[in-house]
Image 1 (cartoon, rainbow, N blue to C red):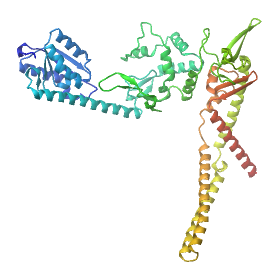
Image 2 (cartoon, rainbow, N blue to C red):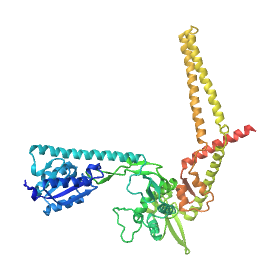
Image 3 (cartoon, rainbow, N blue to C red):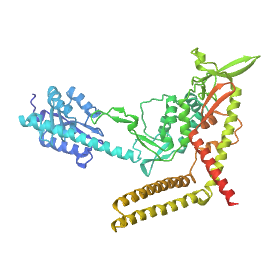
Image 4 (tube, helix red, strand yellow):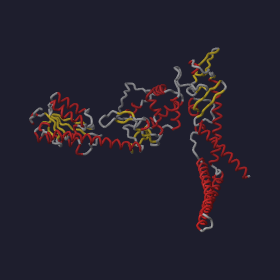
Length: 549
């Protein structure tokens, strides 16, 4: 081990302050550390050759700029002594700190001093230091681990409470000046987000959307943030002439943030010593709805998600996908229908046929002309819209009726009658029990009579439960919201199909032959339930009206 003389030491003053591991007390401030080290060096006659400060760096890693610069100066013989306030300033990683103290510093001939821990490698007191110093390093490591767990738990609590904890708000939003954990809409960027969703609904691919935004001279999110004065950095470099990328467009199209839902905790640091993050399973993500104002309506977001799941490849000479692309299925094998063209007498015709047949894997062609198919689908759509609007009108009319004309009055009267019947059987059971006590009936007669009353009482209670369920259903239906109906109302006068209309209304189209197609609509279960309910209540209202005449 090297031997030092105080007046030969060229010391480096090292100070560190972390914003992650809890080193926030005033006693640990950079200024206090520097003053403490300067006073100590003056008292000991040690010359401070250089100061090294890592402000805002965790002690769990030694990959700190000032520390690395200090070690380079050690190798260059600029300094041969390192002074810190205490061992935790050097580091909180038990293994790495021990390696520097026991191997690296002695090998490089560096004197190390930790003032508050009364440690000076030139004046080690023997076995005591060999035990106490590693133990202190272990405590520092454990302290950092404990702080890391507490901070992680606090952040998870914030996430679960719908608090935004990111450093920067996503494109389209800003941090609320009055609450940094809340997002508010940035109207300039939000309008671009709406444009992106609108283009997708109209059949544009992500690549075409990116090109369209570049044509509009719209700044990409990274450049927009910088233009707004945000000191934002990412792993992506935009170059001299920044452009929108397909990846950026797809991120926006799939981000639930735009419907008011915060999804956080997608990645997590491996542990408090390893700063790299790894993806978290989707079922462990923290998802909280309605945490902020939405930019995109949920129905539009859902429609876009369905569209991106379809086969929507764009033809080389087309700016958007075909209207029916991704919606057509073969009625026999269930595979996609593909679009083809044929020229006859100089005029081009388009038709669809089964992709399985095209590959030669069986099935039949199921040929159908595009013009005929579009006409058939439009007629079905128009008819379905009419039926939905008719059913909605019936339900809306019933919503305005008083309860006594909804059948609630009849059910309520039945419930009152059942309450009386239940009470009567309970009274009879009590009376026959008293008769047994008074000797009017025998115990055997009591058991027989009581059993018969119990059966009737249970039947009355069951009928009451069913009646209450029916009454609750009637009341819950009254005034119930049917937001999906607005999609159909929007197209009540539809005269032609478009990609947006297809995506909003239709789930799939099954082609059996040139004369038979089956259209499956979005919200099919809700539509069927609506029809059944409208028919039931419409018939009930008609019957009650006739009886009242």
